[in-house]
Structure formats: structure tokens, C-alpha cells
Image (tube, rainbow over all chains, first blue to last red; front, side):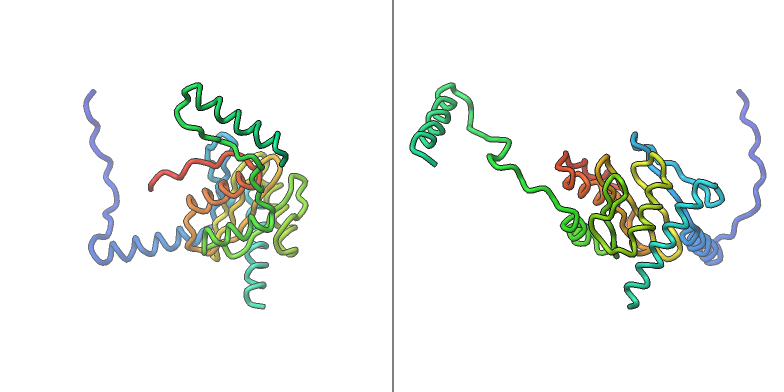
Length: 74
Length: 143
């Protein structure tokens, strides 16, 4: 089967600018809420933050984090 | 222990030796090992990982068995919202929340932002197994 030509992609920044952009992207990704559920078979499933099933989990996690922060500040 | 009881144990061990069994190992101890209590489970988790800030132990019905009262309700809601999932990991900007549960207990811990998920999950399963008196999980694969 003949190989199809590659799709052109937008040029990515390289060098110091590229490293800085990648670092910022990693930091942003790390701060985004993320929900992972693992079923009894050991299979993980990541829920999007916009998923309705993720909402109560994010809410409960936020309450837990707030309570622990309150305890450590008290 | 009476003399007869002591003699019975000696006779049994001599019989095992005479049968030519190589060594005389006893896999199970004579007295059952003490199981981990819920408060001890939390202490043990804090010792295993410095990233764990706080946590709670719930029973199957969601009743708080150990840990701060103010975390109980949110922990119960988290576990209930996860449906049939056995492990939960919620990562947020300020930290992460991890939970693992079995038929009898649920462990919910709050960690700092830099906690390594695979290690925390392994620690939770390990302590949960000790709490249940079950088999410990295998060590996590090297990343």
C-alpha cells in the first residue's frame, strides 16, 4: 500500500522558546482537574472535568482539600 | 500448658521429622496476627508517605471509623459518587485525593500536589489488605 504524504502541521517552537512553551503547557495540564476511576478489574477510566459523572467527585475532592487546608492553617 | 500437651507437640514434631520432610516450617503462626485497626491504618499510611496530609477510614456503609470528623461527609460523598469503582484519584490544582475500597472498608486520603499517584495507590491497597487481613498486593511496576 503506497504511503500517503504527511499532513503539514504548524511549526512548533524550538530551542529555549520551545522549552518554555512546553514547560508552561505542562504546568497548565498539571493544574487542570482530573478524575481517574479504576474498576474492580484494574482498568482505569479518565473522566473529563465536564463529564456529569465527574462533577460530584470534583466537588467532594474540593471539600476535602479545603477541610485539610483549614485544619493545617488552624 | 500441661505436661501432656507439651509431650503431644514434641511427638508431632518428631513424627514430621521421621517422615523425612525437609525442614519443619510452619506457615501460619499459632496465634493469629493482630489485624490493623482503622486508626492504626491511618498512622501507617502517614508513615508510608509524607505526601499524605490527612485521611479517613470508612466502613462499607460510609460510617467514619477513623480520621477527622470534618472529612467524613465529603469522603463518603466521594466514595458514593464513584459508583462501582475500586480506586479513585481526583487531581486538582491544590492537591490530590485518592481513595481505595474493598467490601468492608474505604480509605480516603488527601495529598499534596507532588504526590506520586502510583505509589499512593499502592500504599492504599497495601494498607487496605492489612486492614482486611487479606493478601498484600504485588509491588508496583517500575516506571
